[in-house]
Amino acid sequence: MSASAPGRSEAVLSGGGGTPPARWTPARFYDEDVFHGPAYRAIRAVTMAGGSQVVAALTPRALPPGASLILDFPLLDCAGQLAALWRIERTDERVGAFPFAAGALRVAGGAFRPTGPMTCRGAGQESELGVLTSTFEFADADGRVLAVLEGFEQRVVRLPDDLWQRLFSKHPPTRPISEARRMLETPASIWARALAHVSLDAEGLAEWSAMAEGPARVDWLVARA
Image (cartoon, rainbow, N blue to C red; front, side, top):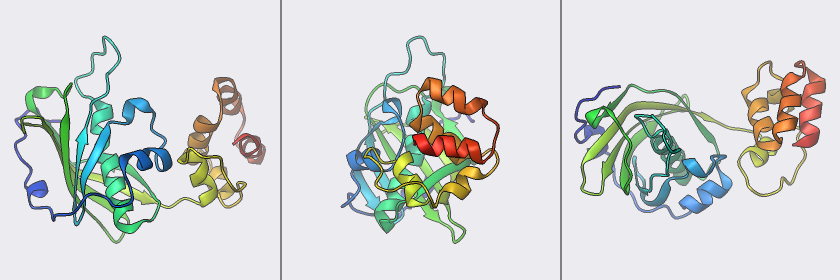
């Protein structure tokens, strides 16, 4: 992370234009495509999502009282959310976009804790290998760029519909888990952990976590998901 004054990003400035999303509003995106809690739902409106660019209005959420963080991580997470929304709007294909690397984060003054309305602009592209690479800048209401996230990389992941419904949709699932069993049975499966966290209460999560890995553990989780 760099504390140098970010300035405008050439990648964002040169990004192709677009129009407001026709299908995927923030409300629909949060309702059907993510499992983020209220603290991470800062996208208020998307004004452009097309070409190679996405632009959105953000409203920072209140961080815990007394938090000593120098970065507003829920607000920075909006970069990944917007890349996913941009991709879904372009293709209408429901996929996950999971971050795994970033080239640099440049922050004005060494801290990023905005309290007022923000504008987030991003430009990116998807490789043939299914990797989204993008750059995002965060500006305040006066147009001052407070942070730039460069070379942000996310892996596009396609999930079976039976698992997708349980991880992302807020509506009751319409089909039993069958296709996803192979993913859930993989040792140390991130998908099994994700399913457990969204499906179980604290007592159930503790019980599942204490079980030995294997088919019986997957059966127990599937019966409660």
